[in-house]
Length: 197
Image (cartoon, rainbow, N blue to C red; front, side, top):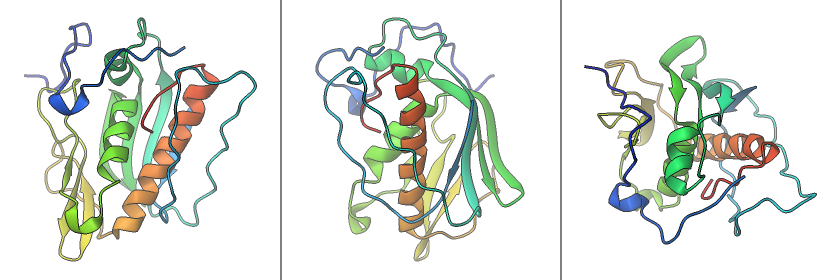
């Protein structure tokens, strides 16, 4: 049985995804684990005319990457939050040096960026392991971040036994910030407002 769900179904949010009201909204990127940076808050629906999103600074190394390419919003129709999380997709990989930890085509990159951003806001002492629970997959765990001793590892439940090396939480948070910033910049250029990243 395929682990992917049909995109054509009418999505229903997990309880944590529910928000009041509908949000309206109007290549290749490499996302690298790096030191943490603060994440700005965004308000409103549309990107203001003439505004721009700064490009994220270049990373200092290329040890670990969340990499995506071929970003598409072709199935985005009504642009509610449900539509955004299901229909903003790209080909996606998790790579450490030359080792591919996970790869997936037509992956819901906005949904992942949003969940990782919300997860990473907690203090480390209160932070649970992260499991990506996607509306596009039958089973959770396509991307996971888990404690390993005093550090953290990144892996996919769909590639058992394949994990990153041990990473500090600052490096994980840095990866999330870069992931979100690059994706937000691309979506801004397409006229799509994507909240919480």
